[in-house]
Image (cartoon, rainbow, N blue to C red; front, side, top):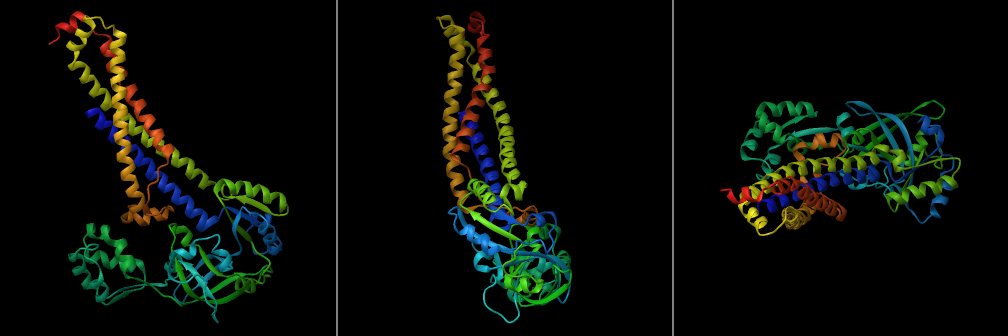
Length: 456
């Protein structure tokens, strides 16, 4: 029974670790593809060497005409990408401005699904719209932290304890212009433990974005001249990657083209979504033959770290599973050795009535295999049930959200284990059980019949 429980727990732990790491990697790869790089990118070769405004694709409509003839292309978007300086009424900072057609962009990017406030370039306004990341908004001081009695009262006590709410009333009706000032005041009224536990929740709860604020964008034209354009912030997005949120802003392509002195048919990047990761590599090869004057790169070439994440995830999963199996092997050796030692007299009797040592050795091994199979089956059922629940509800690591998002990972993980993972871990657990049983079986092999019969 002890061996069965040990094996079941070992298999459960192995599957959970593999599922957790698979979920992390799967989420990171998905967010990278659908928020940041797409499956395939096309550039002017000079742009990859020097990302300056004049290194653009000269005839985007002809590229689009080629893409329209390929079935494997699920969506594409021509983007103007220019480095610029954004200035609000309180601060300034460097950003990368993406000029896009919203309808095209929604076929390759999920940024429009990650809007905290506002819309993704919807509507027609006299002063053009700009969509910025939450981190850019923080840099440009477009966030206020407003603590009102109404907000404190509206917080659910299941999420924030009553004593914390009472302490927050000391800051009621105060407004802070920066996150640092807000956190500094929180530290004064909360204990260190309370602050560490609830600071991220309170920052989200009391932050207010200054939507419709004016933003002046300064950028350089292909002729080297500096042009300014006034925008209104009409949307703020937030992805799972803080560094992405701190760099990229979106405006209408025609507005950015006019500001930068470009023609609307001139873009710096064409992003493409294919039907799958492997299909994207075939698409990249096909496009390279059709668009010989341009550079076509698939996702693994644009961002080699994404491919590394997948390989690294599998490798890390196997390391954790190996550690679990190593600990499992010690448990099985100990249990089976005790089983052999407790049955020395019984084994001696079997040898006395004619059972040879090879058959005794085989008996111990068969017993171990049967226990391993039973423990593996129980562990498989437990793992499948728990993983099915967690894959729907997710595992919430929001307490460490800031750290996770700084690395580009979501704070809520949905474990994911494939059939191959279950089969691999089951085989490894059973093999571990068999190998760990060799030592106890060898101990039984060394027994002498007369001494075994005299054993008390």
